[in-house]
Amino acid sequence: MNPSDSKTPILIFAAIVAIYAILGWLDVKNYAQGGWATAPDNTVTQVLPGSPAESGGLQVGDKLVSLGGVDVSDAAAQSQRGRPEVGEAWEFVVQRDGATVSFDITFGEMVPERKFLAHATFLVGFCFIIFTVRAFMQNQTASTQALALAGILFSFVFITGPYFGSPMLRSIDNAVGVLLVWLGVASILNFLLVHLRDGGNRLLYLPGLAVGLFIAWRILATPAATDGLNNFTNVFVGIVAVFYLIAALVTVYRSFVGATASEREASGLKLMMIGALVGLLPPLISIAAGVVAPQVVLPGQNFYFLAFIAIPITWSIAVTKKPDAPAAASD
Image (tube, rainbow, N blue to C red; front, top):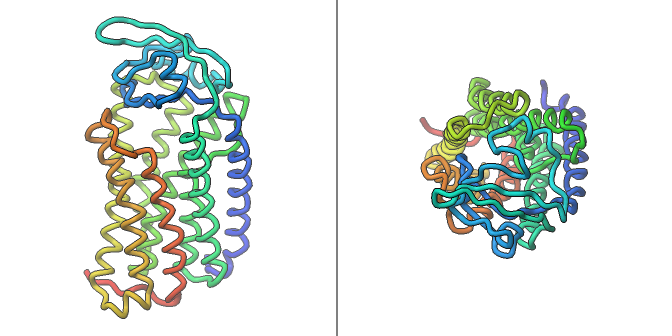
C-alpha cells in the first residue's frame, strides 16, 4: 500500500489499540499482588520484600505444586479461574527441601515498586504508539510507514486490555495479544531493513509467527503445563527473541560503520545507533540469561524493559531526518 494511502488505516488502527491500552491501564488499580516470580519449572526465583508472598512464608527455592487447590500443571483449570482479588487467600503447596509444605497467602495491593512497574510498562507501550505514528503523520514514506506499523504492533509487548470475566474471552484476548506481540517483534527488524537497506523481507516474520502460534495454541488448547513443555517454551521463545534483538543490533551497526560521520548525522544513524544500544542491549542480556540460567535473577532485572523507551523516541526522530532515502549501508 502506498504510504500516503495508508494514513487513515494506520490512524484508525493506532486509535483502536490506544483505546484498548487505556482501558487496560485504568484496570491497573484492580490488580492484586502476590509478590513472587518463578522459573519455567515453577521454582520460586524471587520473593518481593514486604509482599504477601513473603508474609505468607514463600521462600526462594520452593517449587510450587498447587495454588488455591489447583495443580500448577493443570493449565485448563488455571485458565478457568479468574484473577485473585485483594484480600483473597489461596492455599499454596510447595516442595521444600524434599518435604511438602502448605500455607496460605492473602493477596494484597501492589507494593510501590510493582505499582510503578505496572504504570511504566503502559507508558513504554504508549510511547511506541505515539512517537512512531507521529513520525508517519509528519511525512508519509516507506520508512515512516514501516516504523508506525512496527510501533503499534510492538506496543503489545507492554500493554494489556481490560479484564474479561469470561474465561473464553480471556483466552481469546490473550491468544490474539500474543500473536500481535510477535508480529511486532518481527516488524521492528522489518522496519530497519526498509529504512536502512531499502527493502524489507516478509520471511523474517516466520520465526515470530511460529512462536506466536505456538503460545496461542498453549493458551487455547491448555495442554498440561509440564516442566518439559515449560522449559521448551522458555528456550524456544528466548532463542527467537534473541535472534530478533541481535539481528536488529547488527543491522543498525552495519549501516552505522558503513557511513561517514556526516552521513550518520544527516541520516539520523547516530540517533538510531544510540537508541539501539540503549533500548535493545539490556533486554537482550535479560532474555539471554533467562534461556541459559532461568533460575538466576540479574540485579535490577525487573527494570530492564524500561530501556525500550529509547527506541520510539530516537528512531522516530531519526527516520524523519532523511525520509526520502535509506541511510548509507555497506555489505
